[in-house]
Amino acid sequence: MSKNSVVERVFYSSWSEVYGEPFEIPQNEMTTPLNSRLPYDIMKNVGEAFFKAYQREYGLDYTIFRFLYIWTISE
Image 1 (cartoon, rainbow, N blue to C red):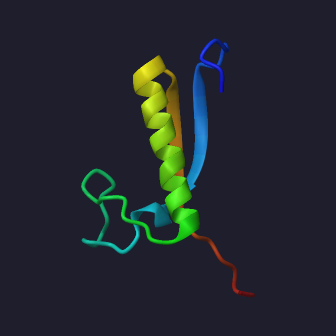
Image 2 (cartoon, rainbow, N blue to C red):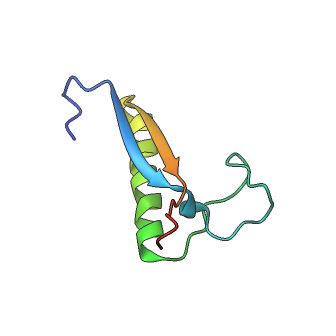
């Protein structure tokens, strides 16, 4: 991502498993630490950290969508 581009906001698709095992129920995204243990979840944490750092350094706005795991009856 170039800091010289005309991009004003980035949307990042993450998922709810970045929180790992819950410390409280219901989980509160403002107080629950990101404590995932699986490689895919950890990489989603890294991606989120990248956007937070880029926003601090260059002012690029971002939105993180944390989707829930969705399954169907056939699973």
